[in-house]
Amino acid sequence: MGRARKFLCALLAAALLTGCAPGGGETTGPKSTEPVRHGLEERLADYAQLGQSPDDNYRTWYEIFVGSFCDADGDGIGDLQGAISKLDYLQELGVNGIWLMPIHPSTTYHKYNVDDYYAIDPSYGTMEDFDALMEACRERDIHVILDLVVNHSGYENPWFQEAADYLKALPDDQTPDPAACPYVEYYHFRKEGQSMTGAYRRLAGTDYYYEAQFDPNMPDLNWDSQAMRQSVAEVMAFWLDKGVAGFRVDAAKEFYTGNISGNVEVLSWLQDTAESLKSDVYMVAEVWESNYAIIQEYYESGFTSIFNYPYGNGAGNTAGVLLRTVNGRGNANVVGKWATAVATTDAAYAQANPDYIDAAFLTNHDVLRISNSVGGDPARIKLAGALNLFMGGSAFIYYGEEIGMNMGTTVDDPSKRAPMCWSGGWVEGMTNIPPGCTLPSGYPLGGVEEQRADEYSVLNYYREAIAIRNALPMIARGDNTVESALDQGCVSALRKDWNGQECIILTNVQEEAARVDLSAYDQWDLVASLTVDEGMVTMEGQTLTMPPFAIAILIPHS
Ligand code: CA
Image 1 (cartoon, rainbow, N blue to C red):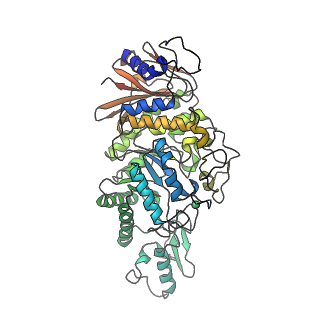
Image 2 (image 1 turned 90 degrees about the vertical axis):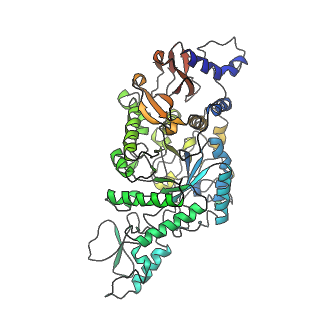
Image 3 (image 1 turned 180 degrees about the horizontal axis):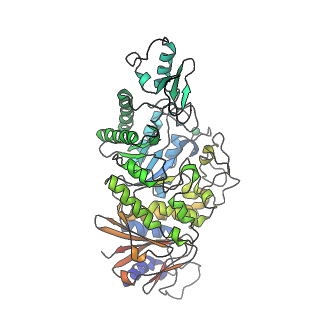
């Protein structure tokens, strides 16, 4: 492992030779085992020299709830100009994609009931603001995807209102006629007494009921209607023409509730239609299922990405593989299975769709924040973030996750969408809390302002992890297999191969240090390491020592 030590020493040479060892004071000369590390910015520069990710759809995406992100005009509601003002921050973090939760006119704070698919909610700004956001993102090579909420529309959407007005005026003895009102077939209207499945709600002033799986305010769209599909295609064309990179498709399990093959057909249609409009479009769907075999079934659609719910915090806030791993408390039967789990699902999804891009996420706007799932432990918050970023495919970060932001004890949706904590105190841009949101009693890890200044903060850990992900393109793009010889006890060894470029990611998922014998790996170099505190990954002879929750990455000699 001579080369590996040489490389590590090269990485550390500047600090060693200039006597800048941590702890201050003069140094008496380097020893090979002495833990010495660069400052963060120097390490980031080292990673930048290693490589650069290609310009493709394997990106590090950042999910923004605009209303709680940053307020530019001082009315307390986050807006598009606020998001523009934080693009420098996102660039510094290293993300190169943004998923905007719904931005269209809506009667709710969350805006998942879209009342006009072609406009911007006035509380968020104007179409000019949106165009400015797109231009600013283009300059930074940040791709933008929009939430495409087409399982249902809003109740106030003109599509639904025109259909409702038509039915209210329709004589009792007449059958609805799409030739008279095309929108009447955009939804599932049934008369009382007819067979009904799912959640049907009474349409006021009529004998009709309409399907609304989630809420009376969200009437379900009818995917049997070719006219409705054409309208969805026009919505996609409008926003792709505005420069968006693609869409995050909401609630794909409910297009045909309880009918997987029906939903798979809709996803195929959405993918094909989007690709016909933009050949390199990026599509990612929400299929809220904790069983990976069902996700695999949905990948038969040929859809690019489906959120990997079996790994993220999931239904009913149950823990996915990511969370079970970091909370495994040294149980090798749990934490040591990380690489095996990733390799298994990767193979299963790729079998269904060889062109799939995994869509890993730790948390989102529907589930508990990570801090609340790991007892506020910064080490576990960090490691969970790195596992998410390193498992492969696209990686999604929910706003605030990169600072380990916590939520109040009330487990409801508004509390999961609390204002982004730009500072522990109030600073310009911070938003009011959404209606119904309960805040935590405090933010023990601080906000962005405080964490920027602390080299060992969650924020700076994320910056380093994303820099490593960007520097080694096989991390996101490689096929995952288990490196069995190194996959021992609480150390997981995930091997990645992309176009002949390989790496091995070693992760020590326990509260104790681990020693790894690398004598059989003298053709490999240690190129990157990530630790949750001041501790360092070190090499002595052919033995790698990993502090608790540390990650070490090896690549073959070039
Ligand atoms: Ca505002």
